Length: 364
View: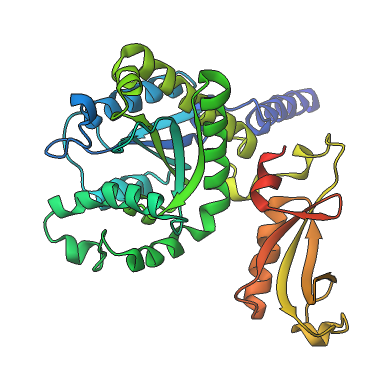
């Protein structure tokens, strides 16, 4: 009898070990990394018609090819906002991504200009840094005029008003850092693999990015108004190369932020990603700045501890916490804001010298 009990125990133990081991579950039982691919324009909205080409067709072809590449990897789930020549409201595109609980939203477009401008660029949501960025956003946003009741749907947003852009930024603020990273990855591949002119990562006020609750990027694959580049983007070769480059950037992003399928992208940026670097990186939460040199006592900073200070010119910058783990930094930021420091932000240092957060995120 004892031998039977021991045998049953061993069988149960083996089964439990299988199901609880990292490799015990089949891929289908794991949560997949969901990417929403948005082919810009469509249907009654052709997009730009530089040199007689149709932006809507090129964007769709590229999006479908990206999806095909990603779908060959069982760890990806691909969702499209459109798979044929139809118009989809901008807010519906965002709804599709949100309902899919996507990890990433990529919107594909082609640019135009009245000059011989050329090159590929990537955009994240933000205040336009110059008139050119505003004009690009205005052109893409103007399609809302094709939609019924656009005034109500977009809460009075006016694509022609620079002031309206300010209201766009707030909803994507939590995902901006990750959006910049994926945009930068795609942009670098355009330059390194395809030798495209680097138009860099920029910020502009795109409506289609406003309502998404995940890292989101709009890709301008090139200028149809440029004779050589337009022909390239309209060709099978050009569309294949652009698709491969964007897919490669997405795959690199997933590997960087989501090595274990199903982990939260915001919390998966672990310190071991920078452990092999010879440089020393550190993240802190900047909570205040003042002309006064306040003692680093918790009673001076609403009960917060682990404080530090840095003097820049005649101003003292006050920091809370320190870590080289981006996920931990996000939690520290949340704590600082709950304490009352609503304008606090994550700042990065390399070997004790302050750097941009984007440089920290892309230097690994």
